[in-house]
Length: 227
Length: 278
Image (tube, rainbow over the protein chains, first blue to last red):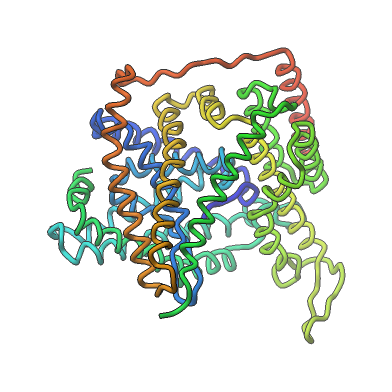
């Protein structure tokens, strides 16, 4: 899901930086208003939490493992705007300090993983679990569906960004300058693996975490509803 | 019961290698070398110019030249070449190389035939356009990744985060980044210790469903700890004089060497942009 440097052309990178700018400003304003002074470190802790859950190896049938992004979960737990800031910070740390995510693609990565993923996850969860009690099974199912759909939405968007590169950036003789595959290849490739494998990993992890929180610390789910 | 509990091993190994790599990176940042002697702000600006030049170029030769400059900078900064090549090629560029291979064939990139291969009765045609696209793609990725990694291993991470202020990023973001960076280590340690504890108790094979439950329990427990840590951290901040507005020390010094380096890199960038227009 992380887009490295060199996959997207300058126009696409620029567009996503421009698209993210008002979202970051709005997120900062909303979070400053809603976050109590006492919760200031929560953003940093939330960002570190987003960073670390991306490193968990989740066992899947067949003896192998897969990674969960946890974007929908962060959206549900922190609320979509605070989630957006937390994931942005985690992605910047990854790109700048560990060279993992691509410096020129931070805008695009943040749009897919820090905006689409937590927002879609949060609102799908909220819609399905509407009026459900904290310990309702519907919340667990809602979290699973939110994790699955939000991840696939973000993956589809990433595939779309890859797929438009040969149309946007090519030489006079038609040679692709960045990601070499068009929409007919990039979109099914990105969606296929996420619909079949990673989406399920995300769904299971998101649902199980909500299930555990219902039992151990239901107050966190109350808190998430307020944001 | 099916398969082993290797996700536990992977997670412990992942956390350990991450910590080890960071220690290595910090080791290079404190060594004496060309890049370590530059002001972090000037270094970040010049590296962004290099990365932008790689992003804009349409030429394999320029892309390779920039990669060679990156390797030379690593050499003059006392970075172990084997460590650097291993760190930069694994994983993104190797992955990119694999996904670029099909693009060289006419199925994906039609064009002038360069040569024809016969594999298991299948006729595969490599096109000139396909080869150009794939080679440019891979060289662009490796050059960009190398510059990004070189910047992160030759600059103290905390200094790198402070540099963000020169780009007008609000202090609250810089503070969040700095704090997040510290908590990553704390959380990784928590995760590593938890997995070691699980491993010492599980000892044998584990069904994947049970494994998934362990992961979910781990994440929720981490969230639980994170949430309660928040209050303790806030009290610690108050006791150190936090008034709602973070204050950061500015101890950067720009020397004449930094200006010379900035001048040459900017001239070089302008020349590359000019060549790119041709």
